[in-house]
Image (cartoon, rainbow, N blue to C red):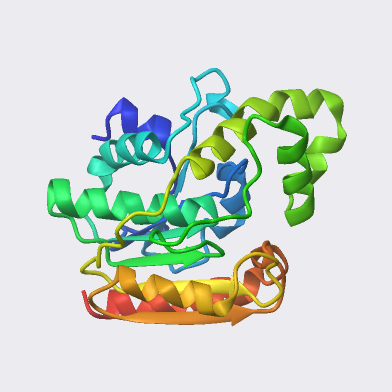
Length: 253
């Protein structure tokens, strides 16, 4: 039986039959579990999709926000212990990619759990500094950055009431990313798959290839049309690619 910590941190999209594999999705800075709602039943009847529920938003609106990457990864890793009875793959976009790496690293080092695959999207590798980030204490600069990058969440900022509701979590996430300095890129015993929009204003293909250093097994890069939030307009193509990779993983079980 899953504990309360797990239910707080993880939203489950149950599979149609007994699952053989799980896919954990990690949203971007300012994002929520709702961003991956449409992914719930896209990967086969025996794949259970999990989505991280960061504190300070939606049904966790009253929970204290977390402002460091290590704090997020520590709490998420502990919550995932109840889900490691089956093979687990991780997909993270932007901040979620860094969180995915840190979570996979902790699962391996602390519990001997090797994730089946780490899928990272639109984010610099752990050993490269991100010099595009605004000061997280400068509210106007953070709001301007969210509008610049776009995505489905940017529209919330135009409504004063909604903006005040989402602002604490948004600022907390920018503190998480801003306070995540370059560190040694440990090669995980798992394949790493990188995804990128070809018009991403901050992350190019060469930078994304640096994620190869995060795997001792295998690395591949897929570039799709679009900007930083290419995965909105290219959702179907991205989902098909991820599904093909999960199919290959399940074939080896």
